[in-house]
Length: 323
Ligand SMILES: Cc1cc2nc3c(=O)[nH]c(=O)nc-3n(C[C@H](O)[C@H](O)[C@H](O)COP(=O)(O)OP(=O)(O)OC[C@H]3O[C@@H](n4cnc5c(N)ncnc54)[C@H](O)[C@@H]3O)c2cc1C
Image 1 (cartoon, protein in one colour):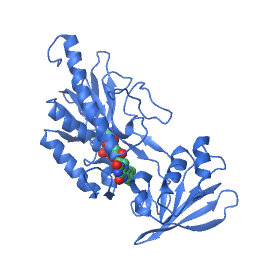
Image 2: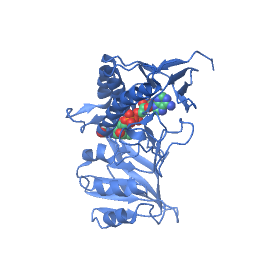
Image 3: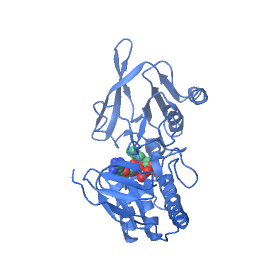
Image 4: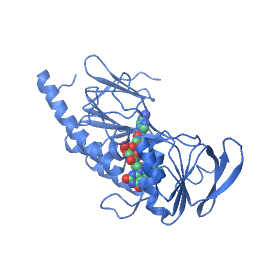
């Protein structure tokens, strides 16, 4: 790792998914010196999404196309997007952050907007990767409408699995809720509601060791009884997997308040319990995770950063606050 001179910015945005790109746009409009650090191509989860049909203003748009439009729009307002992986975000005693990257660069700033998203936990079984976007999904709100009148499998036993199974019955003819244990971790209220739904069939003590399909998409899930090892095929057009979601928050050194699942808790400015660290989009503790909520959070965060820096600089009495 090379030791290069630290670069000083008003704000460092970590991740260039919808939230990061939107934060970059607003930071640019606010005339902040901002950099957005992205480990891959700009777009985040949009690049793993085929069709988007619920982003207001776009009746139907390919994920990659919306990603490109967002990146171009942010760049129009001067967004500087650097390709690198952030490895560590550390707040010093003087209130300045060191944002360190895999390429050995250090960015110094008084405000960080963390928009690093998260990753749905995978089952890791044959067919899951091959049919992702072709029947395998990790988002009911995003993909449920593509399965009108079909039979679906939902895998998992927590709140997300049970709630989303219930949600999916508005489209599916039948939802088979497959859980590896007898007891569900989901709250009792969610369980009661879902189990009373005549379109839901609960399959306990069962795992899905394989997802099978053809050129058109998923055709069935293989079920394996945990107790007997017996296998059977379940004919379904889609498999929705809700076995956990891991927010990318481990980059931050030191304690930041988070909820039980690890999502960062913010105030209404999107500031976390660590002064100067803002969080927007899928990393943030909230009711739903969508493109609209990600860009909404990011708008608030970028505008709040502007106000935060102004108040810091007024308090410091040095006009610009750089060093
Ligand atoms: C399969 C799928 C389909 C979906 N479909 C829809 C839909 O139809 N409609 C809808 O509204 N929502 C949909 N969603 C949800 C939506 O994509 C997310 O809510 C949204 O992308 C969140 O934006 P974000 O910017 O917070 O995070 P992300 O999109 O996850 O972006 C985070 C970015 O941070 C980068 N990053 C992470 N760690 C680092 C690091 N250490 N250094 C540098 N960069 C880093 C990542 O590479 C990524 O580009 C879907 C999600 C999935 C998984």
